[in-house]
Image (tube, rainbow, N blue to C red; front, side):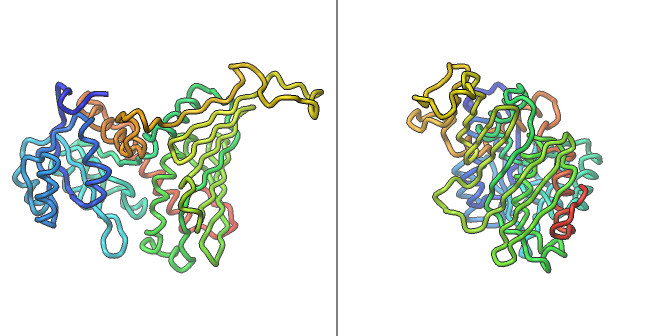
Length: 359
């Protein structure tokens, strides 16, 4: 990994938004990414100026329109802002402006409210031949990245099923009837983007909901035949891993806890069914059969153990900049990904509980 100052070429960017999320999770990634922070804009002038100084932005603007009007030597824009008063993401309108200004654009998730808004991104990209990437960070979390690598290597054999646990409340039926009512459910976009990356496009979905708490059990079928079970929890312990993924293959099982701890349980070929009930040791088999574990070493004091790396934000920002500098389009969080993810959200919103809904 290179430090920012070691890159021979850097992407000149404008950054819109200087809230706490940006300060904690996005702007610190620039230490290890080929990015030159040319200008920063935020409606809170006092905070924006402080953040601009903190992260070395050359210039500050009190709003993004002034920035886009004045800055003419930029390569890309990054937008990290909260939703409006009704919970609707503000990215479609803002990204349309930066793309129309001739800037490749990276936005945080969730990207929009529904699939119908994806055309706003698409039209702006086509108009100026620019790219949009959404920071679906989980794909770049080291634990999930390792899972994707093992799946690509077919280390689990044929994938049969998976289960995923995530703390998220499904809105009540009256809320689900409107796009705005589903806004609290939009964190699911990042989860769905991960499932899309690991298992391919979804074909159908069904769910049942606890009317008292909003906890939901969801079943999903992917076009390649993989089936998945999603447990959207309400009230789980805050000291437990926030999320857990289990993938079942042919004789192998893979667990990812919190996106950072990976356990691969391989088939024990030394196990003789005739010895069942007569084993004298739990230490069986050889190195080729033993479970494998990967987890961060926090005592190593390496960039890999920083929360910006573990969360996936570092990878998302770094890959976005590196691909643009190599004159290549974004590979993840593309418009195709966004359209599929938002289509799934729309189908869930309109689906009747217990019915099977085709995506």
